[in-house]
Length: 413
Image (cartoon, rainbow, N blue to C red; front, top):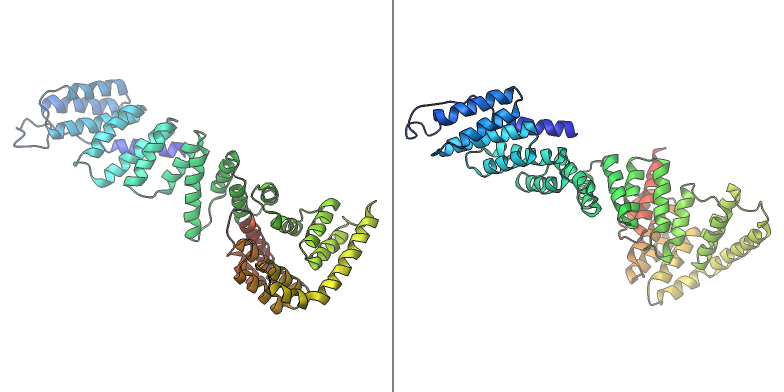
């Protein structure tokens, strides 16, 4: 990229290296021609520049600039040649100063000004002068407009100064615009954003970025990283602990006996015995339960879970009736989820929606529950639509997106 950008800077300066017209006419007769005193040294400068003799070329430019009584066109042409020599010799400061004069001149066409603004920015970046590259790029974007290449350069200029906050800000904006346009962000863009978020210890943001990586570039390492991000997210509320275990189980990341037992116990504490039983059954199928010194304890817990499932089925109607009179919608959501797991899908989903309407402790966790209930009932399209409505930064949105990703992947098989 740097080679292409430096060439762009040279091309921008090369536009100034045109045949110079020297005239002996008065300024009144030829306002846009050069007097011999100015034109001859500029012709010498152009010849020296073509031969890559930059010191000789700049000396000739200075000779022309020292002439007294120059008209506006002569001063403008001198600035053009100074910019060309400075740019091609790698004198970033000199080229920038000359470009600034040309950009401010009414003689410079709009397209040429855009080229010069780009040249200033790219020369500073190529010279690794990132402190000057940043304002130059921002000036270009403000005066000329959006440009993906220049925006990428801005991200890199911030990043290479260890300004991870601003690098992440610009990169996030680019990714958001790409997604809004229904296009796929590049893997490099997402990786750089995740790196910046890691440096900033933005666990929630990093997890969200890994969700996008797993969505568009499904690799095992991205799943492992995003699941780790979920577990270590400091904003993750206790209400989502079971959800993390469940998505880990779905991703094949839940393998230890302790994890299966913890997930089962959390589901029981949340009043979802059928979910607990499903987790235990998967643990037995996977060989994580029932095969070691803890087999007796595990069997005892399973017997308790099975009994609780039967008791909860018997009290399901009473639980739902009591939940209607509860101060918040949480009890209705739990009661409805249980009813769904017991096979009365429409009735259970309706209870969950009543709970959401009544007001749960966290609307995004409640929407996540609705999506999971729809998913457990086999209504994948409805579940995906619900998952897409989950928002927030406490992990609920990330878990919802992961479930949606799993469902979409399964639909393609």
